Image (tube, rainbow, N blue to C red):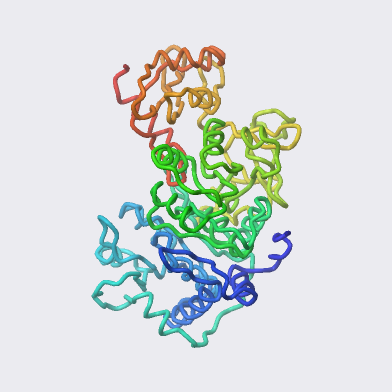
Length: 529
């Protein structure tokens, strides 16, 4: 299968139409006890597009999606694609201030939101926000409550019903025109809107599907968030292009996802490291019939060899890892099922189709194989740029058009990519560069350690000292000195932690990346132990 060739010139909308024409009844979305085929999603998206066009939405407008993983998100996404409208997928759990920032920065004219969730009344929230957002003209709600109807407020199901069978005017959409504006917070805490085209997303989705041999017989579980580029690309579009189906989880807890995997006879399991760690804990107390699974794909954050091995044993599957970046529309590199076991355990595989990876010195020159430097990526999935940030966009690319990821890695002689860490995370201890990932890999192998993050803290003698922030296995008894001694067995002296702190959990971004700056601040504010 070469999906990358088949999507040439396609848009997100035309990809759905093509699949719905050839396989209208084939299951696409599985949600709760309901199943929607490709034809069902196409029909609902057409109807919603007609109603949105009647409201005045047109190509280039922004439509925000404040929804959990649910069919309404998918239908609204494809309806937007048909009109050339740009989607702005947002985490429903964002604090009100961050939600307002993203809506204002994106200049969204319409929001599709759930009515309520535990602890949040979204109708009340948007009643407060709308007067402060002059561009926001329409609110579409998903739910079954008795609505207060005001100007510009509509129920999702009413719009779908009203648009059924109606024609609408829509401009021809260029595959290279913007389709998604994805806000990435990252570990530095500064939001940026990443502009991604139809072609960007489809290219990355097709390349991912080809790399993992996704087929029409596959059922995918573990897509926990659709507001991330991985949920949009490998989650929704890879399955669409392959003719596979995806299970949408509103309850993304470990027990619920495993129950869905068992119930739907899932074959492919996506997940970020923290989710898989939680599932391993559940599986220790209750076995499941997961014999249908053939593959587990870990993405979103660096992963250690220990987790890969544990997951392979617990699920009895091949485990592969992917290097995903929002600015590359998700997957830039991924291991394959037929890769040698050591490459699947210790690398993030090889670049996906039509994507090139270079390793750069600080001055921008290429480094030889087996050398650590900044990872730079060029390919059809690389973003259009940052929304309303031309200087940030310009500085994100080198003179050859490669996107500078800010991640450190190396390419080995066989072309496999090894992740080392973030440029800004390197700890400079007494003039010696220490890459946190190397320290963490050693500590993670300790039987009493669940998770760990190594961060630099200011030190008057060393410049920076290494602090290992350890989340112990529940019920384990371990001391900081034991962790230090464990490290001394295999690590050079400059890499051995100077401090060990035991904490309940690591602060993380939505994709599972550790917020190292927050950890460093916590440590600086706490007295030494």
